[in-house]
Amino acid sequence: MSGNLNVSIPYLLDRVKGLSIDESLRLLSETFKGLSVFSSSFSLEDQVITHAILHNKLEVDIFTLDTGRNFPETYSVWNSTNERYQTQIKAFTPDYMQLEAYLTKKGPNAFYESVENRKECCHIRKVEPLTRALAGKKLWITGLRAEHSAARQDLQMLEWDKTHQLIKFHPILHWTTVEVRQFITENNVPYNTLQDKGFVSIGCAPCTRAIKPGEEFRAGRWWWEDDSKKECGLHEHE
Ligand code: SF4
Image 1 (cartoon, rainbow, N blue to C red):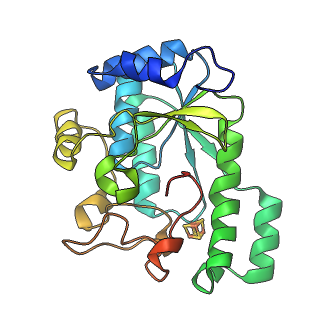
Image 2: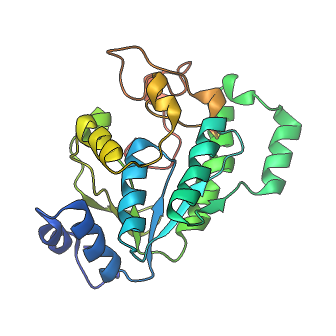
């Protein structure tokens, strides 16, 4: 069950079964009217969902976490998305007092020195702003795809997020990379040009690198750490 909401996850899963992305987003944004939110990092997947929301004029707030360490290309696609859809994607930034204290004490690149420092940086730049962005919402839409990691294989399109006490919806969980690319091309959706240079999972610039053919989707993130430590705290199952 979905906490104190009046609808259950099994019920919603049944309702979205077989629906197109447009249909499922419409259904859920109407079910959670004014209480649904979409977090975008301007990945290919997120651009698909942004297009579906804005093209269909759905009542979903779109926000991004501006960590302050993003690639210039990420800021470019943010800008071109605002222009293309005549919209203003909402920005959440780190709490300046926490960030100033961290940078003063540890310096700008402390995340390379220890997992603890890296997690602290991710907490300040991502997790805390995310918590503010999700406050009071009932539905969190994400661009997660099952193909991206073993941990996502058993995910369902809707799940309960204990940390933030809301339902998460992954509308393109079962899409393939080919389908995502095809959607972007057919709808002329702006996308991050780093995607054409071997960058597949794009986060902050100092913590992301291109991957080689055959490497796992997230191999380019925090590559200096053990695989078991590679999570930033945004999603519970990673
Ligand atoms: Fe900091 Fe790197 Fe995490 Fe970005 S990905 S918040 S720069 S540690």
